[in-house]
Every structure is written in structure tokens, then in C-alpha cells.
Length: 172
Image: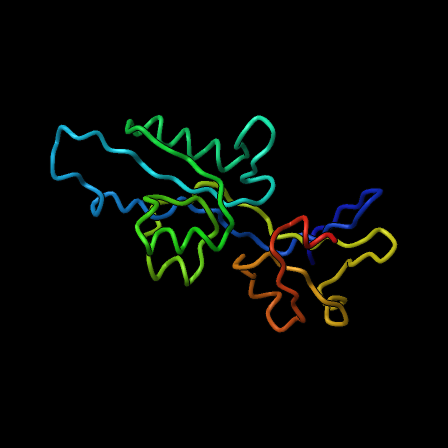
């Protein structure tokens, strides 16, 4: 049975675990021919709360801060940008980023090497307070909003899915 916790606004059912991964140090492809030329580590973080966002004070978020800390500890100068989720794979393919912080999936694995998981999170189903979902079998009659390219636990396979742009769109 899944753990549930209630609140005034929503019921949350914990389904499984997924891992946010630091992926794609493609630094070997980015090694500069001239040793004197300074290198810049180009990092991309997914634009999705609470991982990456751009606000009035600039970019921030949990994964954004982790990416900046990884670069700081590794040593090279770095540029960390918050971009839409799907853009991260394209950026790696096109060579406009060296590292991404996002959920792993087959699309990413085809173009990059996963270095290490950096954050494990539960997968949750959030329902309206007036229409609580307490068991997985209750989802069979509903549509489930899932942010595009997010990994889907096997326990949710076969459900009616509605792909959305981000978590905010899912709640709408």
C-alpha cells in the first residue's frame, strides 16, 4: 500500500522513487586544443519548480544551486542556465551544453553518459481535496497530468496520461 498524507488542499499518494541525475559531462569532447585558453563548463538545469526557475532576482532552484555547487567544487568557470526540460537533450546533441541536471530517460541515455544521481525523490500523485485519490486503482478512471519527458514509474504504466509542459500546467 502506498503512503498517503492529507492536507487542506490535496491528497498526496507516494508511488515510487525516481532520481534526478547529473548527466552528461561531455568534457572529453570539449577539451580545448590550446591549454592556455580558459574553458567554460556550460550547465543546463530544467525549468520546473522546485528544480530550476527564473525569477526577478535571476535563476535559482534546488537543482540550479546543486549544479553551481558542483561546478564550484570541480574548479572550472561555469555558466548555469535554466531551460525547458526538452531543450536539455537537444543542447547536448548540438554541443551547446556540457552538463545537464534533469531526470534520466532513454532519450537522454542515447546522447549522454550519466555521471551520478544527485537527488532521489518520491513520485507523487496529487489530487484535489474534493476528489481524493487514495489507491492506484482509482486512477484508472481519471487522466493523469505528467510533465513532458518525466520518467513514469512502472506502477503507473497503462493509465490515461495527459502530457503537460511543467508542474504548474499539471495543476491547472
